[in-house]
Amino acid sequence: MDISIVDVRKEFGRYPALNDVSLTIRSGELIALLGPSGSGKTTLLRLIAGLEMPTAGTVLFGDEDASRKTVQERNVGFVFQHYALFRHMTVAENIGFGLRVRPRARRPARAEIRSRAVQLLDLVQLSGLEDRFPAQLSGGQRQRVALARALAIDPRVLLLDEPFGALDAQVRRELRRWLRELHDKTGHTTVFVTHDQEEAIELADRVVVMSQGRIEQIGSADEIYDSPASPFVFSFIGESSALPVVVRGGRVAFEDTDLAISAADIADGPARLCVRPHDVDLGEPGPGRVPGRVSLVRRSGAGRRVEVVAGKDAHRVEIEIPPDLSPSVGSTVGLGVRRWRLFPERAPAA
Image 1 (cartoon, rainbow, N blue to C red):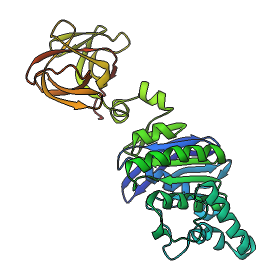
Image 2: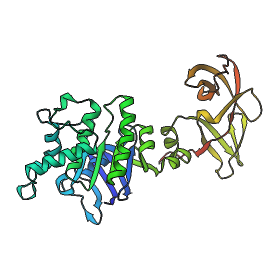
Image 3: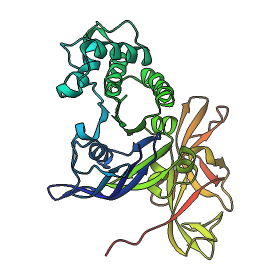
């Protein structure tokens, strides 16, 4: 089932939660809506589900305008962060709930509903637990039951809102791998919301990065990490630092220091130099290097993290170095940039 979001706007009172958003989701695709709190990702998911109606714009399921259709009319499966299981119902009853509440003409027989629940429990690797209650399950098991319940109605689209947000880190990692495998088996068009960059990059076919009610970039994990479209995407996907610089005649300067960086395709004027910790060398001060002072050194996994304060406004740059190096706090150093992204500063809106 293809989904098309066309120039959708959603306002709550006078507050625009979504600003003219357009997005095409291909049939069978696994899409992540990624962004910080308030970016509009959950609002967009709820608009796809039919839990919210757009103020303007169109939501298409295939060629069908679904903009004003209800959740039931759209036939979507929805999985919430906190499971939303009925505590007084067994696992099998929870899974079959969406089938039992259908109009009588479309409602399967009780035995068929039970059989469907048992089949789905096998699919989500919880065979034999159909007669337990939610309180007797772990958090990861409850979320699998919630997913089985969403699949029971044979949805055209599967939607997940922060599905692993309530689980600990180890369980989240296990369920991420499992969800990807399950998606590949079932082939449902799937959209999930997350603020976890690692989760989005590991799971999704494409990632939709959102900020302030707009889409900043859509692309594969490699595209958004290696070729970010804006300083926001660069800073939100992975770790990074940024320095204010000036471009003059294809060269880049940080304050009074001419850096060994070419900017032939960037217009003269202020810009932002964005770098990642593993793309910066720590060495002696010298030509073409950002001068700075070491403010912090700490062990981090297999290496060390060094924080360097640069420039009169004390801009902080984090870098990774091997564990056998340990510069002194307060020492003067020079930073050499191996890889970077330059973004011209936008003029303030009139």
